[in-house]
Structure formats: C-alpha cells, structure tokens
Length: 173
Image (cartoon, rainbow, N blue to C red):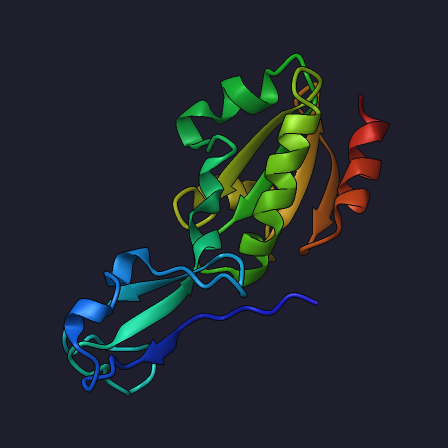
C-alpha cells in the first residue's frame, strides 16, 4: 500500500559545521524512492498555522513533477487531439494537488509507451480546463476516459491498477 508524504519538516542541526552538510536541493533519500529535500524560505507558512523556522527544509515527493510524461490537452486542442483522433484516446483528468492522481501518473505514462502507435494518451488538468471536465461530468479525480471516434466509451474513476486500465483499453483497440 502506497502512502503519501506531503511535507516533513527537518530543521538543520546547528552543531554540525555547515561544510559537512550537502546542498539541500541535491539531497536524496536512498531508502525512500522518490523523495527529495528542498530548502524553505524563512518564515514559510505551512497549510496549518505552524511556521517553518529559518534554515529548515522540506522533504517532498518527486512524483509532483511526473505529469510531464504524457502531453497535456487544453480547451483549444480538445477537438483536434481527442475528438477527431483516428486512434482511440485515453484521457486522464487530474489536478496537481491530488495525491491519487500523482500515484496514477506513472501508470498512465507506462501505458502511453506500451500502446504507442495504437492509442493516444493525454492529461487534462481540471483546474486549468474546467470546461472540459464539466462537459464530461468529472466529479472525482483521477478519472480516466477512453474515447473512440470522438465518443466517450468508458470511464474509470480513482487510482486503479494498471491491469484495470489495460482491460479497458484492449476493448477499443
């Protein structure tokens, strides 16, 4: 079972000489894949009422940046890229703040590679393209919709296993 680590505050140890500390932006945690340490600005506010002290750092999940593997589609491109496609199209509706969306990004990226030439894959950021999300009744994210010949064929809601999406895709190839 995967867990989500949003923010973990790690104050710097002032007793250690600063030369012995690696630069914060390059710290990686080998025992925890996908985590990195970022410096914080002094007095940075957390989502709660706590404030980070000067010299503190954050440990964040690198999966926040994985949405770049599959191309994004926006309102102006929707018709030409999705509805007029000669191949079936898989579209993931997601948002940057959504934990389950970040969990499913690598699965969508893998499917895009596995079905290259047979299936087109796109991502729609529901915060940026709310018109498309509203048009297709997206109420929960992540939602994956498969289109064929410009028609919505099937929708899968939630962070589901790769096998579930593969079964859906195979029906429309």
